[in-house]
Each structure stands twice: as structure tokens, then as C-alpha cells.
Image (cartoon, helix red, strand yellow):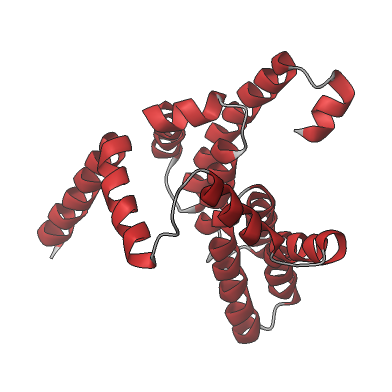
Amino acid sequence: TGAVMSVAGPSLAVARSVALLTALGSALLVHAAARALGLDRGAALLAGLLGAALPYAARLGIATVPDGYAAALVTFGAATAAHARVRTRVVGAVAVTAAALCRYEAWPVALAVALFAGVDAARRRATGLVATAFLALVGPLAWLGHGALTHGDPLFFVGRVAAYRAALGASAASPATAVATLLVALPRYEPELLALAALALVSLLVVGSSGS
């Protein structure tokens, strides 16, 4: 985003254009993630359309913040974490490390992708999977290194977030409170997503019981 704005100018119109293009790219990434998971073309196309059409995803897609495409990058990276092709896993690692440079919430996913790659590298003795594990961690490590070199503290962002919350008058939330808040926010902001997930789960159970 910064690279585009440095060339085209730091205007709101440029930011909106970038948001539109990244929203389209995010839909394609969800489609690619579905294909990586083994879905056929029709199902993958439906996944990409649903990923862009969900109300909250649509709002994030047109917003001039990285949250929308960071989520798509995380989705693709997670979908390729156990893929049979090493090349696909390398691309997934690049995606998840890019997401980690956008949002701290992607860091646990980057760690999981790296762990999957490390375990498989030991089992299969594949050097490409070693590179995958390294690539997945580049984003978080680069950010920590930036903090250490520029701010004298690799975890400088923790203090900034805490100071920002304190300035707003918000107290530090316990892990239990954070989880409870998330459980309340999911049905409030994403009822369609939960309904689709429940429908998919019921469908899998029905298919599994009929097959047995």
C-alpha cells in the first residue's frame, strides 16, 4: 500500500483504489485456498464469492486498512500448511509472513505453518520445507528486529497498544474476558458465517453417517 501511494500519491482516492484491488485479490486468494484444500472448481468459486460477500468481509474489503487482505493471506497460508506440494507450501508461507507484517493476529498462524513445515522437513528430509518454515517466520522476526533496532525494544508495540488503550480509558482484559468477548462478537457480527459453518458441519455429519 505504501509503495503504491509513494508512486501515485498519498490521497484518499489512491487508498480507495488500492482497497478495491486488494479486495478482488482477497477473493482470488480464498478461491486459491479452497483449491489447495482439494475443492473442485465450482466449490472453490463459491468459496471465493462467499468470502467476498459476507457483510463484515465486504466492509473490511473496501476499508483502507490491511485487515481484509491480511485475513485472506492467513486463510491461504493455513490452507497450504499440510499441502503435498512443497512449492505450494512455500507460497503459503510467503502469504502468511506477509499477513504477519500487517496484523499481529497472524503471528500464531505463521508459527503453526513453520511448525508443520519443520516436522514434515524432518520426516521427508526436504530442504524446500526447511525454507518454508523459515519464510513463515520472516515476518514476525523482521518486525521484532525492527523494534529492537529502531525502538530499542523488540516488543515495543505491546507498550504502544497498552498506552493507547489506557488513553481511551480501557482496562487490560484478562484472557478469559478476551475469549468471552470473542464468543459474543462472533454471533453479533458474523451470524451468516456461523450459520454456514453449522450447515456445513451438519452436512458432513449426515454424509458421514449415511456412508457408514
